[in-house]
Length: 386
Image (tube, rainbow, N blue to C red; front, side):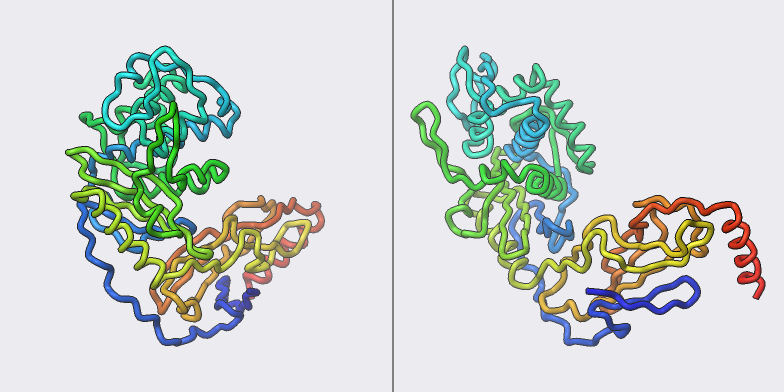
């Protein structure tokens, strides 16, 4: 798409498909979201971060083994940085071996590869594997929990606090459906080379084969992750992700009453999202959305655009109702720094604000020479005067 523009003062208006008219197409019919039997839930488009459906999504709740998503995230981050290798052998402590609940069945005094521990955490939800990984990465589970909370803050999970690597019930150990969706989105985005582990249906270690507890992996071919959780306090929880064409959705349900219920309620959310919404890429990072007049520079114009893709989540077949407006700061003067904001892009649908993004310079432009700057000062004076 190449936008057209008209200037009035320093406003630029353009519409998708090169038209300066808001097309009044019939709006897609979207039914009310399904009723979900869970204490808190959320449905998010992974590409745009747009929340399609939510209820009690910012209520603090116990995460149970959803906690292990962060444990795995940190291990994957350390692998990506080269601080760990999947072939590294981690010692199994007495503490790890004695962990109750779901287990990988590692033995105290032995060593287990980081690759196997990661599978034990993700596929088998092993509490023993999680503690062994935490101790190997940070020296102790307490130190690892501090690392978990640092990553939480960095990712914007502002209503989450971890006390351990497993999700074992503990005071002051909580999260929200929204924060879990944020973490799931980060896992998909940051470590694609490890993401296929979340889709594996079973894993065998030490002669013991255990199945992934995410029932949707068997029921819906689009589902390829992520993690289940259950304690008496938390109920049955599930963070699931599914991809259909160019659209990836993340569904979070927390506090359902059974294993089958968490799968059923998650399926409702995913079906609703895929049926009635689409991921629409309006512009790519680096697309030239406007060329603005520039004073005092080596060039007389500067190219402006977006620093990142502009991706929207909209009702299906409704993109013709989109309208974008660009505003550019008045009288831009060199020097211009690439990536610096010099305006904004506002996107509306049927006059409803959808998103606002910074309009940035796509190039660096240095100041002109002395004589050119004097001439520009004279021109600016008379332009302002008349």
